[in-house]
Image (cartoon, rainbow, N blue to C red; front, side, top):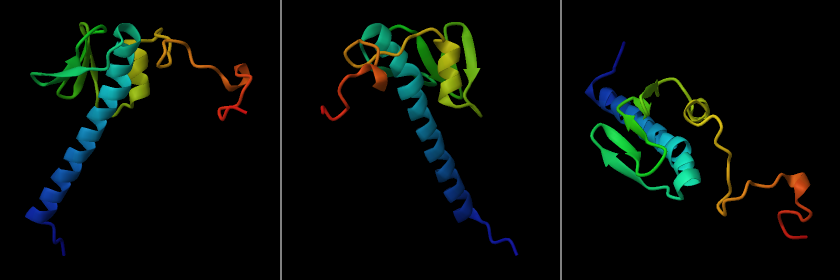
Length: 115
């Protein structure tokens, strides 16, 4: 006998809301704020109708279930952050917090612990 009812529907809706919020947070942090920081030195985002956007270059925004980059729209459903990053900024080099490319372990004469 199926015992699903209004309480189960509410729990399912809450779980979907939590998953959506977590996904939007990942897009904001990994797809939008990173490229903006590398270009503009800021990780600030702002609320806009339908979602949120960067405050400086590159001009990126989330509009409901799409990432908008210039005149291109990328569906957020069923995709991870890595391919989204590649679609919007394929040639953007990764930089550390001090503006330098991070060192590979074989390039650093000292270990991460300073010995």
